[in-house]
Structures are given as structure tokens and as C-alpha cells.
Image (cartoon, rainbow, N blue to C red; front, side):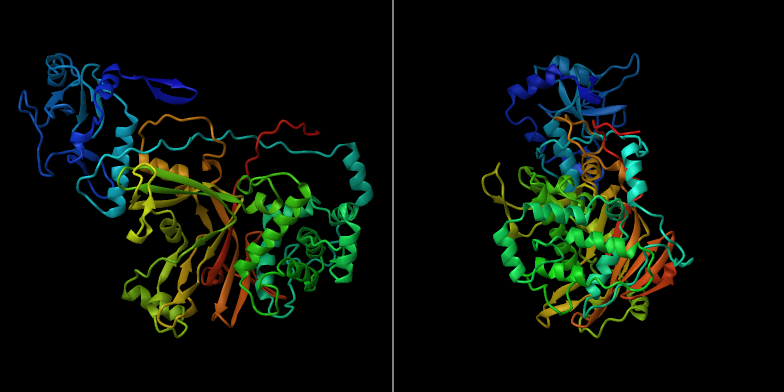
Length: 592
């Protein structure tokens, strides 16, 4: 009883089920105390008692082909599709008044029409069974679960893959290439170091900046953008001069905020363009990013970040991308959504979308919100290692002399942190959610997932936390295992919804783009920012993966290291890039 419409399986409505729902205001109320879930989150079944062995009321058999319980009178009858075998379920439906045609498979908790002799679909019932499985899995309950409705999930259709088409320059572009470019001189290039690998001088407690800049300078989409002259600093300055107001220019000149521009506008993207040109020029001497530091100070003047003190690398990363986004988005003067990744190069590379589901545990009403993000901050897993594991970890990673050494010793994994981030959790009684359906505050389940993956995923590990014993911030030195290749598909909204609803059929409304990230969920590690030392006296170092070789960037010093050195490092920020990039379809003509 199904058909295929627009590529989606859509069941034909059963007239008996429609009549049953029309005549009954609460059709599944009698089954509230009979739905059983085998832990953890296993198959749903129907039992009045957990130890009950159901049998057919007509023939007394307990193991025929299928047993079905009538929703109206709870009578259990058998049904078989074999030729010549009597269906007591169909006979029961025929002998009773209308409404007894609908039954439930006692072993599978699936709806069945005894008159049509086929499975039927009801969205509210099916969703209730799946949510009951989710609740049982989350709370560890193997007992009864209430039937609760939920809105249908988002569209899970895969987006269309577009074949890559190489582009060749036309006559005008060839002329520009011939007149405005020159071959790169590779005479000073080291045979052991790839181009672009250049140390950055420490300008006074600026290792936090150098470590992040090294990762961004070798972020493939970002590097390709600037080296392809997509943001030309000379053209940008010319446009800013043409649009500048004379009074503003005079004021900023008086204050000395010229940033190399005549009109004094701060543009971090222009400074990034200059830095890419310098780093990839072939010069091996350490580079001093003084101009970029000054521009960033001007951007962060209203915060505590603009000082000579040591800063947090993650805060600098957020502030820097915000500065690029603010300038480019303001110049384009077009409303863009950050989550779409179309507003600026910073969000095109790093922006993704997080999905948050808050579900009322009383009625099943689910509130879903979507938020753009440029990184994901992860809590370290609670210390669950045994004495042997903790001792081994403590021998390799010191506990920094903290009183609460259990927080510092032990081992966590990046995949475990992601599992914890996307795991459904029951909010506390002091965090009750106002349910729009119940019109009162109710206990809720909250689950995070990733709606849309960025080109580059940045994971920030929360290593600085508040110590309840000392009433101050402290650093968590627990060792973190991170893979070099990462599959993000288990943490996508589409995957989590599939695990929640299984293979059950749901109607879909519309076609939401980027609903599935299955085609680009494989990521590869290319940069790790580490932090060593204590909270008030630490040092940042970056490990880069270039041409299948790892390099340690410690301010102006760049050395080659092996994989084991990287694995043993205390990761603070990890940068992963998609292994395969897929191009969106466009109606624009491409010169060939």
C-alpha cells in the first residue's frame, strides 16, 4: 500500500485507519502501559506484563506467523499469509463492529489493518514508538514508555553531486597573466621544506597569534582563495579610498590609524593577503606579522584582547574571523546568512550550522533551532579510565600539581567528545522548558547535532575550567587522542534522525538544500594547535601536515617531526579539512 512520489515512498491512506482516527479522539491511549522497549533502545513490543507470553485467543497458539492485538478490545489474534491458513485476526475484524480492523503487531509494535491484510502507517503512532526508544536509550529505562507525538523530521534527501569541470583562462586572462606575473624563483627553496613553510617572529607574548596564523596560512581553501588573488589588497585600498569620507579620513589620520591605507580603514583581509604573499614568496627567513598585529589591535580595541599580555589562541581565532567577516560583509553591502557560507571567505571556509532539539518528555513536542558556528567547543570526557589507564596516562602526562588530579589524569578521545556533544541529555529540574503544547514548564531532553558541515572543521577543546575547590580558573591537562582521519557522518542531524526514527516512513515537506552531508563527511587532519604549561604561563605551538609530512612551528623555529610526536601533543585546537570538495550547480557560464 505505497507509491513513489518525487523519489520518496509515500504510503496510500488506509480507509479503515482514517475512520478509526475520526471516531476516536485518543486512539492509542489504551496502549500507554503496554509498550515495552528492550534496552538499550532496542525493538519495541507490546506486552501487558513484561513476562507475558501472548497467544491467539481463537486457537491458543503462541508462536504462529504473527500475533496482532486489536486496538479497540486488546484481543490477540494470529495472522498468516500462507495459502489455506485461516487468519483469526481478519476473522475477528469481520465479526466485530467498525474500529476493530486496526491492530498492532505485538512483537514489532507496527500498525496492521486486518481488513486490508497489510501494514498501515500512522505518523503519530510511529513517531511515538521511536521517541520511546530514544527515551529508553537515553535514560537507560527498559520499562514501559508513553506514546508521545513529535513533528516529522527534516528532509533527508541527498543533494545532487556536480561533476568538477576544470577552467582554462580566456584570451583576456592570458594577457593579464603574461603581463602582470613572473615565474617564481625557486633557487632559494629548501628541498626538504615545502613552499609556504616559514617561521613567524614572536613580537612579545604573541605565540597565541603565531600558532593560529600558521594554521590559517595552510588551510587549503583559505590559502587557495588568497593565492588566487580573490582579495587584492591594492584594489581593496583603492575602493576604500574612493568610498571614504573626508572628515573620517582626516580624523583617523590625526589618530595615526592608517594601517597602510590612505583613508585609515582597518582591513584584516588585506593584511592576510599581504601575509600570504610574504610567506609564499620563497623567502625562508622568519616573517614578522607586526602590521597584522596592529590591525587586529585596532579591531579588538574595545576588548581586553588588545594588549601585550598573553592571550587565548581560541579567542584570537574567533576575533580574527569576526574582523574579516565584518569588513568584507560591510563592503559587499548585501544581506547574507552566516550559516550559508556565502557572506565572506571566513564563513565560506569555517561556517557550519548546528541543530538543537529540545523535546518535552510529557507530550513529545519538539522545539528545533538552527545556529551558525565557525567552530565547535568540546568538553573533555569525564574520567572513566581504570587505575591502570590512569597510571599509564599519568606517567606520560603530568597532572600539573593540581589537587584534583583525577580531572587532569586519564585519557579522552575526540570521537568520544563528539559523541558526548551529540548525545541526548536530560536537562535538570532547574532547567525546565516551557512547552508550547502543554502550556507549562516540563522536563525535557536536549540533543545537539550538526545540520551542515563546513569545508574546514575547527574543534576547540575546553582545557580551561573553573575550579570549585580553589575558586579560580585552572587548566585540564588530560591527554586527548585525536584521529588523523575523521568521519563526521555519525554526528550529522540526518544520521541522528535516522538512528532515532530508523527505517520508518515519514512524509517530507519540500526540499531543503544541504540537508544531507553524506557526500562530504570524511575529514583529514592538517593542523593542531597545542598548549603547554600552566594557565598563566603557557606556550602555543602548531603542528602542520604538508605533503604527508608533519612540521612543528614554534614561533620562528620550524622543524620536521614524526606522527608520534603529533599524537603525543596536548591538542587545544584541531583543524580538519574535507577530503573531497563538491561544487554547487550554477547557472553562470564558465569560459572554456
